[in-house]
Structures are given as structure tokens and as C-alpha cells.
Image (cartoon, rainbow, N blue to C red):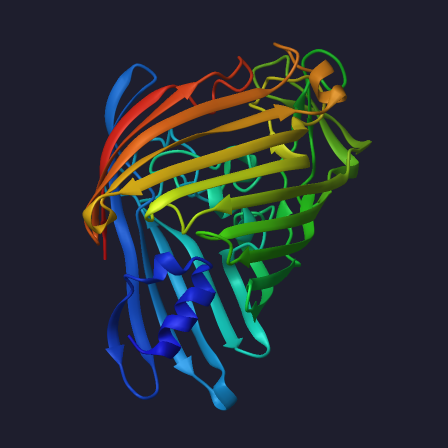
Length: 420
């Protein structure tokens, strides 16, 4: 693989390890067309049932075009694939999350963006892509089945596209790296001007048997900003530290709220001029650090991410009284792997995801329990059969309370991943 292509792949994916298996389909002096991805499936026992489920399978196609004055340009298109059972609900959360409305599609868009990069001027990317927030939180998102529940990345039970924390929608990012003798420093900036409508429906808003709805176009997500700062130091096997901040404007306000009487067979509109205002910012910040060469690489890899957020998490429907079930939270994730053997083929790994509500108003409105507490502990084993095939066993132990119980449960899974 030529050096220009390799540099572009590393810049676009955000993780160099993901680029190592990219397969060139066509190469010339003008363009390089490549493909990468993997198929992942596991047998999962959870909620009392054993089922074969799709993992985070994906297929990426990209084009690299060397441009004027040492610029590299191109595009990436990546689709998530559900091949085992397209009608099966996704139970295990994390990196396999889809955007709203895509949960049941056999083929759905994970990323789609253009890029232009230059060694001096940095990397510019426009479209659906990994957020700069993920430049920090990816360090604990290495579980084969679950994970990514407590860092604020996959907000609102989606892929984090609307909030700009995961695979950000319609985003423009700039990343610039500076290399030193002692390591590498990177800054990332993000902006998105898109707006996503919010469907607000609140029961018993104006008394028993009433329903409040926000008119289409009044309640929405607005402008998004994000920043990340990371530093990789050449200390021992490698030390990484980073911080990220993300904010998106959340407008939950209207002068024309619709009130319905729901006491009959069909809702009846009784008012179309109800005023309400619950607007706020959705923000989240993360700090992360790891030591080691990398997840599933030789020796010890230990990573920790801590997170604080406002209005970036969503409690299950019906769990609170009031206009919304957004809440402020604090969370942490840990991932540890130890890899050994010929060709580094054996890996023992584990860690946890823990998230607690940190919002007195929300906690007072809970129907059950006095807080939102999500807690999942993991232990697993991975065998690298060869550089493109891995087998794994992963066990999740759930210690969440009643409010968080619908999100995750105990599970045990065995699976296989085959890389292109």
C-alpha cells in the first residue's frame, strides 16, 4: 500500500490499527480505491434467551486522490450491516448503535464524508464521521460485544450523530498533529449547523388525560461545537492523555404547544397556543488516559475515561414525570487487556461501564428509585487465529437499578470476527 494512501486512512479513521487491513481494489497514478471492514456475529445469552445476533459488522469503501501541493483528498462511505436477522432488535448497546429510524435496516449508513489533508495544514473532513469527542473516548470502546455506555459518546441510545459525540451528523472537523521527540500532540475542532427535530410528547401536562405535543419545527437540536486535545508521550510502552468537550443547542420551546384530550377513543385537540420553554444546552466533557501499546497489542493496555454531562442522557419513557426525561450525569469507563503468546494471539480483557444521574430535579421526578444508575462489568477472552480472524468470549455482569434496567442486562456471548 502506498504511503499516501496509508496516511489518508490513518487520518480518516482516527485509529491507525483500523487501517492496517485496508484492501486496495484499484490503484493508478491518479486515484486509489480501497475497501475495508469486517463481519462480526455472536451467540448471546441475555434476558433469559439464547440468540445469534449481529455485531458491529461494517463495510467501508473509500477513494484517495493525491491533489495539488501535497494535498490528499478523497471520500469514505461506510455502511453497517445486519446480515443474520434484519428484523431482530439490537439488545447490546455500544459501537453497533444506528441512527434514529435505522434500527431495523439490514444496511444503514455509519459514515459518509469527504476529506482533504495536508501535513502542514492538517486534516479537514466534512460529513458524517467520527466526532472529535471520540478522539478521547475511543480508548475504552474496545469490547467485542458491548461497551460505550458511560462516556457520553452514544448519547440518547443512538450512534451519537445528533449530539455530535459519536458518528457526528453533517459535521465539519479539523485535526492537526504536531510531532515532538517526546511524543505527539493533536488538536481537533468540530462544527455542525444542522438541526434535527425533537418529537416532544408529554402526558398529563395540563391535567389527567391530557397530552402535550410540540409542533413540527419548533423543538429541535441546533448548532454543535466540539474540541479535543490529546497527547501521546513516549514513556515506557506509551502514555496517552486527552480531554474533549462537546455542546449542542437544544431548543425545547414553543408558543403554540398542542394540548389534546386523551380520555376518549381518539385524542381531541383542545388548545393550540400553549407556551412552554425547557430549552438548554446539551453538553458533555470527557477526560481519558491509557498506558500501553494499544488494545489487544502485546503486553498490558489499561485505559480509563471519565465523563460529566448535561442533558446528554435520556431515561426510558415513562420513568419520570414532567416535560422531558433528559438528565445530567457522571460516568466512567475502563478497559484493560493483557496480550501474550506467539504473534500476540491470546488476550484476556475486562473492565466496566458505570453511569449515575447527577440531577436533583430529574431524580425528584423519577417514578421509581431515587437515581439513574447504570453499572455493567465485563470480562472476556480473545484468540487471534490470524491477522484477519479472531474468536472471542465476553461476559457482562449487570448491576443497574430499575430505571436503567431496560438499557442492558447480564449476558454471555461467544463470537467470531473476520476482517477484510
